[in-house]
Image (cartoon, rainbow, N blue to C red; front, side, top):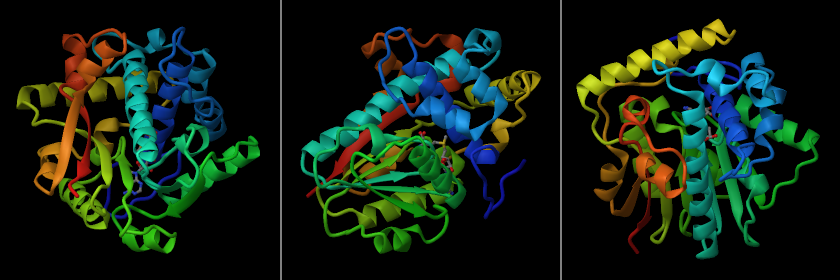
Length: 308
Ligand code: SAM
């Protein structure tokens, strides 16, 4: 399924299925013996989507060790990465809210339940932006589960390649007041020029003193890049043997793109970088080995503030 300029999806298809995949990884991380994160909504949301492969994973019928070997991007490693990534973005939003920011914008919110599970200070408005089918599904499913948002949640159902700033402002976002933005698990699904436009637009909509957190990939050595694509394809084939059919390498825009952290620094943001490699160690999870390097390489989670 190759990407097109105006492609759409739900949570069981194309890019939408990656939101279900990372939610399944969050459910696995939540059920670990000594969990780093607690996302009680990940498991029921994945089950509600109803993709058999992911339902069997979160129920334990299919275990990471049934899928993982040295030639694939391991499901257990994905769960470990999701644990540190989730904690990184959770801490980012809680820290910025405690510092007084009252507008949080979660771009490509997928099945992220931060608006329902974080202990937001009073007065915070959380904007969630994603494609309409994704937004509708999560809102309806969490309401059916009896979950209530812990902040004022406003959904913005729009494609991030379209005029999302107008939709965000129509929902009440005020660009003259500081904001906190996240783009988690998003940039690789945008063409390189759309990534630049997104970061430019965020900068334009950000009042001085705003914050941002994104993932950032330093320039990849071409040999490692080929190995990464090969491992993505092998992983897709392995999962296909267990009934799930999606070619991940077709969903992402591979190849050269600007490194997000440097691009933001050039636009006035003061950035701090943390690599997955160091976050795993800092949080007591197994370190990356040589095989994992092709999947995560020097992937970084970065955050920063726009100079006042
Ligand atoms: N941020 C969520 C998380 O970490 O759980 C979801 C990450 S998921 C890997 C990718 C998400 O990006 C999906 O929810 C998908 O719908 C969204 N996405 C990708 N491209 C998009 C676009 N052009 N417009 C709106 N949403 C998009």
